Structure formats: C-alpha cells, structure tokens
Image (tube, rainbow, N blue to C red):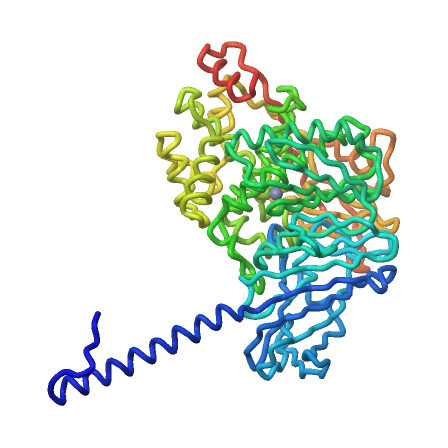
Length: 622
Ligand SMILES: [Zn+2]
C-alpha cells in the first residue's frame, strides 16, 4: 500500500490526514505492545525453612517488570488430580509486600485466597509469607526437621494475569539437608534453582527436600529417579528392574514416552498410601515395611503402574475441563471414569502384562472391583458420569450414607474399561483393543489438536476403533445405572462370573458395626436392608438382641455375638433389638432379610469355542 503525500483536492487531503493519523496511532500501538512483550514480568521464588521443626516454609517472591497499580497474589484452592477444594490459603500467614527499596506496600485481603498489593506501578515488588505445612498426604505439604515435601499448589502463589509466565524457584535446604528431587529443570549455574515455563507446570512439580535415598533407572529412553523418604525394607535393585518393566509396558501402549526425566517421590511411613500424578513426576505413599511381603510389594507396583499411566491418561490425554486449570474453583468433568477408572483398569492389567500377576491373580483382582461395585447400593442410584462430575462434593466428601447413594468412578470405571476392551476385541476379532482407543486419543487430542477431549469425542474414537455403535454402552452403563452384564462381556473370552453367595439366603440385619469408646454402634445402614426398613440408625448403640447382651467383642474368627445371633435366624424372622439412641433406650422389632452381598469369582467356560479361547489368550496375554 502506498500513501502519496501530495494528491489533489481537499477531500482526498482530509482522507489522507485521517489515514496518517490512523497509521501513526497503529504504529505507536505496535511499538508500545512490543515494549510490553520486551518488559515481560519476571517472577522468582525463594523457599527457605527457618523453623522446619514447627512445620513452616518461608516463601519470598520477587516480581519485576510490573507496571500495574495493584497486583493480586493468589493461592490455589485445590491440587489438580485431587478433586476437592482444600483452601490452601488457610495455611498462609504473615503476608507482607515491599518495593525494591524495601519500603512497605499496602496489602488488602480481597477474598479467601487473594492478597491485593498496592504496587503504584512500581517495577519491582517483593512479597513474603509463611506456610504452615503439617498434613502428610500426597497432595498436601509436610515439613518437619527431617525433610520438606512441597506440594506446589499450597506453597506458591501466582500473580493475577501472570499464570502463563515463567518462574524460577530457588530452594534453600535446611541444616544438613542435601538433596532436592523435582521434575522441574535445574537452571544452569544457579545452585538449587529450577525453571518452570509457566505456573501450570510449576503447580505440577512437587519438591522433596532433605536426605532422601535416591536411585535411578533408565527405561523407554527416559531417565527415572526414585526418591525414597522415610526408610523401609525395599530392595532398590529389584524395584528398579520391576519399575522399568512397567514403564516399558505402558510406553508400548502409547508408542511414545514424552518425558526425558521422570521423578518418583515416595513417602514411606508407618501406614502410608495413595498417589498423585504429575506431568513428569508422581508422589506415592507406602507403608515402610510393606515391601518384603508379596502382597505389599505388588500393591506398590500397582500404585506405580497407576500413577505412571496418568502421565498419558489425564496429564496429557485429558478431559476438556482438566487443563488449563482454574485454580480458584472446582473444575467439573463427567469423564473421571475414563481419566481415573481406565487408569485403574490398566494398573492391574499392567501387572498382568509385565508378568507380576498370573492370569488367575489378575481375574481375582478384577473380582475385587466387581464386589466393590455390586455390593454397593449406590451403584443402583448414581450413574458413573454423575459420580465423576460430583467428585468435589461426594467422592471426596463421603458421609455415613455415601455407600447407599454413590458409586466410585475408580471401581466402576475400571469395569467399564474391561467391558470396552472386551467389546472392542470381540468386534475386531482380536485385532484391536482399548489400547488402540487410548493411543488414538493421545495422538489426536494431545499431539495433534493440543487440547482436551469431550465425552462425545472419546465415544467417537472408541466407535471408530471398534467399528460398532456404543450408544447402548453409554446410555446404560455411563449415563445410566443398568446392571453390568458381566457374562455377556466376559463371555467373549469364554469366561463366566460366578456369585458363590447366590441362593444361600443368609439372614442379614443390613448394617455394619463399629466399636467406639467401648460402645457397640451401628456404623452404616445398608439401603433396602432390614435395618433400613425397620429404622435402626447410624450411631445407635446396640445393647441386646432377643434378650442376649451383645458387646462387639470378637472371637478368633472375628465374629461378634451379634453375628452369631443373626446367623442362627432365617430371613423373614423377627428379632428384638434393644438400642440406646441419644440417651434413650429403645426396643425395636426388626424383620431380617436375605443378604444381598455377593462373593464373586471368574471361571473359565469348559465349552469355550476356539474363537473365545483366542480372544482370552489375547486379552490376558496368555
Ligand atoms: Zn489415579
């Protein structure tokens, strides 16, 4: 485009003046926005521990390149992967702010997790605060004089509008602490300093600081670091070899391992457990003396398989709502049954494929999930998509009635993973399976489209891979509460589900019991059972049944007197239950019902066809 300066007549001149004006305005705007890009804000954190014995982290933030009159510093309210608002700001104290010359800046708390600093356009702002950290779990921070575990969403505040900016973190270990384990990249030439390209990655990178026992192994072309805190009876050589096998099995599904470096932070405590997934690290809990027993060891490997699988499923291949995250609110998705449930399906399956579980042991593990779903009354109330969506208010906030009104998206999701896998294997004559759906989704939505998937997109991929309609599967099993037709699906592999309790007609009071402060109490009332119908309540103290005193004391077979009295009677019999409720002694007539609790096993069909046997062989890697 050419702008001639001297053209003809008044009108063109006015037009030209207008165009010049526009041109210069545009030019000035371009220059100023360029300046803004150049003067990008820099954010650095310094974390030190002046009083670790009292469980405090001292956090300092330096923000430079500021231009704003005020800056909001915010502490996330939750930790991605653990779907509960935990209000990490509750642990913050002593927040103050100053400028580059150490002059105090006014601070106003404007809501539960936001501190507004009156910056007055000053280029550099310094902020400091302390965090109390004494909740030992995989998603909360814990500090004592032996180590510091920093769960990042509860430690690092972000500045409003700067969440996609990079940050550096310098850790000043306390006293004799020598090691820092984290998935973040070290900054060259700067001791104990790490770089996060943005706050999503910072919030996905926990730190273990102390004298942890560190060992390495390489698998799938990735360097893995295992940082063990708390001691324990683990065998490093055996663990390194076995963890490597799991890494290889899982990488084979997705056909690539996106990390160069991966860190397992393991907290070995007296009765630890649980895990939380991150992009290139995970935090695991284990009972420190559990490694020597076969069950304890396999449980640990199962946890490793689960959390490692998440580096693809949920951290990269993710439901649309799960990233970029809103750190101030709940992030709702109906798809945790895929993100968590399928991960739970694969954790046991990986132990099978890597040879840690025999086919029989694997089927037993599946029956655990079946029992958890079938023996929970809530499976007839809550669809698994709804369980996912309401995780924030239900799964993570259980009460005495939860078993009657909810279902776990882990257990039911794992069973839906099994069903989908078998249906795809059957529809494609063993050519394709759930692996192909997972890797297809990873390629399409993580690698190519670089975004999260919708429920409909997951269904479409599963239909594309299987070549069959999954309308019924979704309507009945995902959005509905139809009973899972195990024998139809397991039947493709010539397997049958057997309920050993079927037809036993065992009498039941329909409660669980608990002994608290020497009182024998109703712990829960099962929906539709005898106690539910005839009105026994949670926390009722059970004093006697048909005139016999019961106390909750158990014999060598862990049987109470109450169990014995109920077992002697039949379904339909009336019993008199004497209870104490809120200080009143009450006598209740209760009509016993038949127990609906199932005990399941999967058995091979002796008349299975060659086709069914071939499918079983493929599914169970026989
Ligand atoms: Zn998980």
